[in-house]
Length: 229
Image 1 (cartoon, one colour):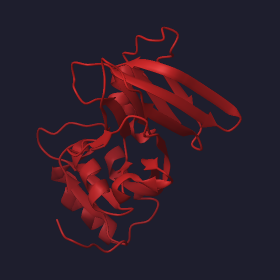
Image 2 (cartoon, helix red, strand yellow):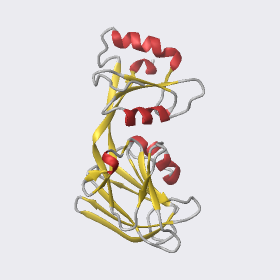
Image 3 (cartoon, one colour):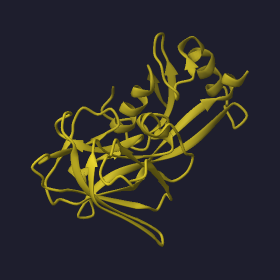
Image 4 (cartoon, one colour):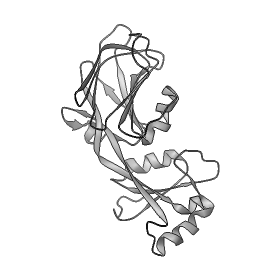
C-alpha cells in the first residue's frame, strides 16, 4: 500500500469484498478493479485472479466503453454539528448504531427527514439500527431485511422489539437525513457507531445527536466486460 496515489490510476484489490471496503477508506474517491483470489467470497469481486493479466492487457491496449464499465457509488457518512466524525467517517456499505455490549439492547431515538416526509421514533429498543447504501444492501442490510434496493438510502431496524409497530426497514431517497441519538437507560448507557468492516468504532455519548446521510465522497468500481464473455 502506497501513501499517495495518482487519482487517474486504477487501484487493484486482491481478495474478497472486504478488500474493496479497505481501499475505499484508504484512498480518496478511488477507481477500483476488484479481483477475487482463490478462496475469497463476495458479491462485488467477480474477476478471478487468473484473468487479471488478460484484463490489464485489454485495458492498456486502449480500453474504451466496449471493454469495461465504470459505475460510481456514493458513500454515506456520520456527522455531528455539520462535520464528519473524526474528520472522516464515511462508508461504502453501511453505518451501524448498536449497544457497546453485544448482550444488551440499545435505546435510541430517531428522526428521519426525507423531502416532505418525516419519520419520528421516540424510543427504539433493540439490537440497533443500520443505514446502508445500495452498494451495501447486499451485505449486512440484506441479512437483516432479506431484501436489497438499487437507489437511495436504506434503514434497517435490527431486532427492534419496542415499539412493536417499528417497521423492519425503510427505503428513502438519496437526500434523506437520518438523525440518531442515544437515550440514557438503566439497561443501556452507551452505544457505538461502526462503518463497513473497519475495526475502529465511535463511542456515542448520551444526548449526542448524529446525522447519517449521503456524503460527497464516492468510489468507482470498474468491471471488465470480459467477464461476460
